[in-house]
Image (cartoon, rainbow, N blue to C red; front, side, top):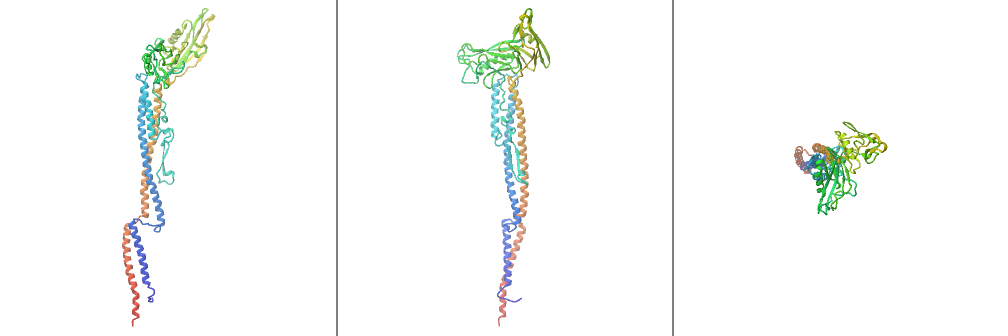
Amino acid sequence: MSLSIQTNIASLEAQNAISVNNKFQNNTIQQLSSGYRINSSGDDAAGLATANQYAGTIATLTQGVLNANNASSTLQIADGGISNISTILNRLQTLATESASSTFAGNRATVNNEYQGLLTEVNRQAAAINLNTGGTYNTNLVTYVGGGNNQANSQVSVDLSGANNAVDSTALGIANTSVAGGGTELSGGGTAVNLNNNAVTFLSGNANGSQTFNFNIDTATGNTAVAVAVAGSLAGITGTQAVNSLNSSLAQYGISASIASDGTLQFGGSTAFTVTTAAAAGGATNAIATASSTAINTSNYTLDSSTGTGGAFAAFTAGGGTSASETVVFNTASGSKTVTLDGTNAGSLADAETALNTALSGTGISAVTTANGNNISFQGNNSFSVNETAYTAGASGGTGNLFGAAGNVAVTGPAATASNTGNAIAALTAIQTAVSNLGLTQGIVGAGENKLNYAVNLAQSQITNFSAAESGIKDADVAAEAANLTKAQVLQQASLAALAQANSAPQAVLSLLKG
């Protein structure tokens, strides 16, 4: 190779080595100081793209864990509220059971006041946990956790939508229940009287004022007419006081008075009865019921004899020596009873009732005078049917009539709320259903909590594994890079020394020019 002073090849090569070694050293220092193997896309473009995908997934999962934990907390709050509502349902069931007993001697109105207050509290607590009908959480709750291969697999759903999953009294089916004493409301006679009107006192204006209620009641001796008077006062009495006065007289007959939901007077009991009201007397004003109002115990199976074709009862009398006769068959689950009425045993309404009650003894069917006093009301705790099998008109003017024509006569079934305990028994049925429905909702909430916990466990596992994958691509190997730094520093020093030698080499050419 020729010697040249124009181009110092060795120096250029040494300079190039210094540049390479300097870059190597700087890159190594950058990796050690940042902790990353990839500090720019030029370091590993493909690796950086993959690492960024992992980083994005990790960010989603990290927030997803927070989402799931928040959702789980929300469900725990709802779970606590549902448990409290369950306790309230237990109390409602206790109150309903208490009122459902026919031997209950307390005031059902007082029991019902607590009952209605608890229904309001159920609604308040359902709204507080947003699980009232149409509430914020009465829907399909979707929590985005991430980590799935599609959007659907990245979400956890807890479906609390629909009326069946709300826990207020309406959704639970107990909003309109009551444990107040049931009964048959007085009807007819004019405008109903609202005994809940606290602005009015009743039977007022005269210390001798009163109002009488005329009952026909089934007793051991058959139909018994009982007049129950409610005394007023100069200042008047309240609706509650009027009811208490009635009950003090009616308790011995198994009949009770109470105030219906609309404020009117009602009567109930297992005893067969009819009632009609007289006008307020003795100068009293503001009667507790309008005159000529009537009621029948419709908590029993009932039949008014006027429902036949004969109209009002007509006493059986002889004519020309022969009286009319009527044969009626009463059928019950335990058998049938046949009664024949004629001039010998039904010459008056009272005689007819006596003959009927004597024949029907043991069947559970009673005959009492209707409120209007013109007919006979048949009542029974159990189902029965009536068939008039024969009717014979009296000869030469003989009369008599109970139903008036042969054939079956329709019996009316009982109304559940017309009995003293009917409301409470209906409430018990509704509460039992409510307890079952509440348990289903609580089960969905509990299962949702478990699903979210499992989702959190998976997400945390994925975060760990994705972080490890990202680290393998992006993080620097500190041990290897520390060795590379030593190597780079030695090479840099060697390159500088070589450059110094290469720069001094052209001076050797001068020795050839010395003479």
